[in-house]
Image 1: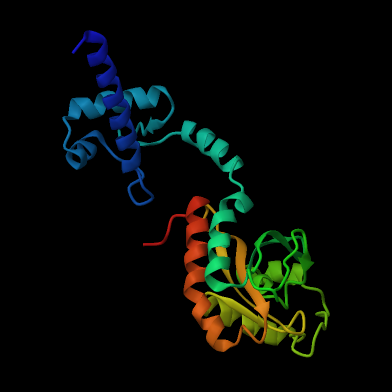
Image 2 (image 1 turned 90 degrees about the horizontal axis):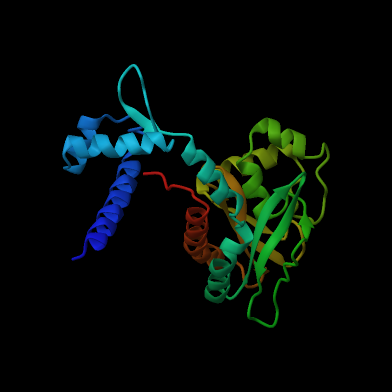
Amino acid sequence: MSTNSKNSSSAIQSVQRAATILRCFTQTDSDLGVTSLSQQLGWHKSTVSRLLSTLEQEGFVEQNSETGKYRLGLSLVTLAGIVLDRIDLREIAFSYINELAELTQETVNVVVLDGKECINIGGAASPRPIQYVGRIGRRTSVHCTAAGKILLAHLTPKERYEILPEKLPHLTDKTIIDRQVLEQELAKILRLGYATSHEEEQEGLSAIAVPICDHTSNVCGAVAVSGPSYRLGNGEIEAFIEPLLDTARKISRQLGCVPAT
């Protein structure tokens, strides 16, 4: 092996080891010393110390002057910000919602909260001739749709108070227009992890929705399956829960959400 090849191999190993050290820092182990890292990784202390020193020079770690331990540095925040800025929920969800539409044979939409309304930012149409058409950009009320209710359920009472009108619009005979009844429904949704709407916003239309979470583990949107009520009875709705949750988990992971352990 030539000298250049040896140097190149050594450089690659150093980069890999530096990345390995950075991955050792977690929420529970945010401050780590040379000795603990050496024991954890099985490397000589001098190797760990040298790598930490280089990472510190680049701002990827910083040393606590009182304890001598290291923690992640602010340079990582800058890099993370660049990545987060280019994350597009609609783009990330595209393939997943198309798979779900094919599986359920119903229309799948990605919905976010925009002001006091829900807005549909992405969709995959049902392959069936009779289908719900989830037009991109369509706005709906939050209190009577499955996606709206799942988003409402994850807001604080104060945030809900500011969003909901004093008098809830009465769209069908099944629309919840009593604030207290709606609060009870939202509490139930939080327990179950999903929301349903049976002809509350539109006669003949039913839906089920689950939340999507971002890199902060906060709810940033919802994914919903919608279709004609005669096809989305209780049995069908129940069968869609796990596929919906699985789709939401995949999208959330792509957004940087770390699943709870």
